[in-house]
Image (cartoon, one colour):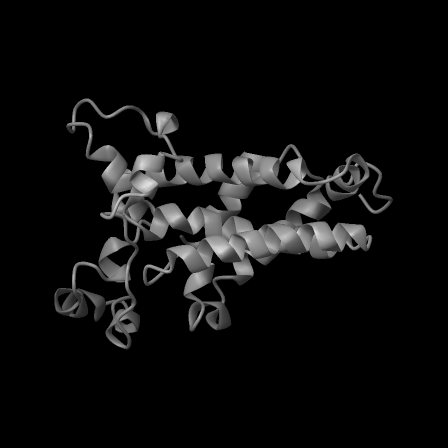
Length: 213
């Protein structure tokens, strides 16, 4: 998913839970996952190349880092880890075929509004049909270059990231469902983090008493 939409998702999902300073640190960490060094060799950051287990493990790793950081009083490290894990959780919907599989149960005219999307359907999550886009380098890179991309796309397999991604509204109405699911999973991830914290850690994480906000 493109960085501006990650930012919008965070604002909509958790904007009322954190101070502006905390939200900025979370959002910046989220966005950095899409910088060049996070794109090459880090499938687990984005659920790419069918790295499902690796991506879920990466989310768990960052959740553990949040707890450890707060135990050490390092709230900024905790916010940074939360930013990283939310990026990965959000990309699940943009880089896999979860949303198409969910929508397949409806005909075109009977699909519910995007706000009703079920983002945690275990039957789909466990389905052998679930997969994410593969990165076919170097063609994958050329597919995003204006005027060249239209000639490259026919050369890429349909299971490529270039064909499968739902990273922006350019992919059509399906992006609305992707965006809504990403908002919901972001809220879920915050609830999971808070459930593992002590009261004191939760207060620190949400910055209720931060002198800098």
